[in-house]
Length: 185
Image (cartoon, rainbow, N blue to C red; front, side, top):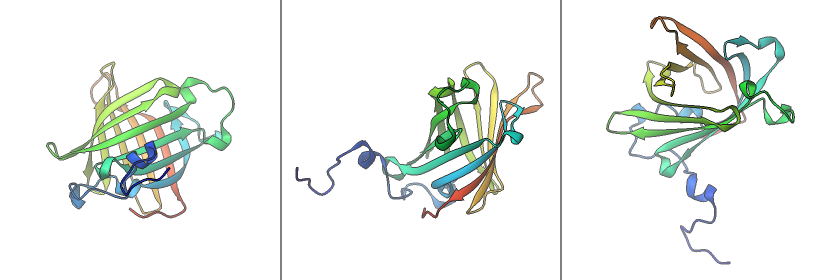
């Protein structure tokens, strides 16, 4: 079948974008550095120290929706290490959609992990060199997810929830990431 210029042949063709939209100011691009593939060491998950297990995660991120959003897939354990049956609490095969919202000059974030029955909605912004995402779970628990120590080839990710005292942040997830291969963003 012959196609014409601009014709979409697949979901991937329609979804993927070559880069950030010009509608997003470069100074507000909190996530472009994430584009590419990453391998992560899992240090904590659901507040359990799993660092001795050698548990690995993988993340793949791309610009989508005409460059107005960034979508990623987080997989834990990595596909090469996934057993046939996983405890839902240790199973992550989910996606994040980060959509630029010019009205609030921030990113609206939706995380869905059907493999682990977990979802969250947050707002993300730069905070100096870091990226901080703040949200509230369906049960009312405030959450804070942070990308810190970001370089071109690595980042440190922390997932926290606010304790009932309203002051103490409890570490629920911690990942150290290394870029796989090269990418352009």
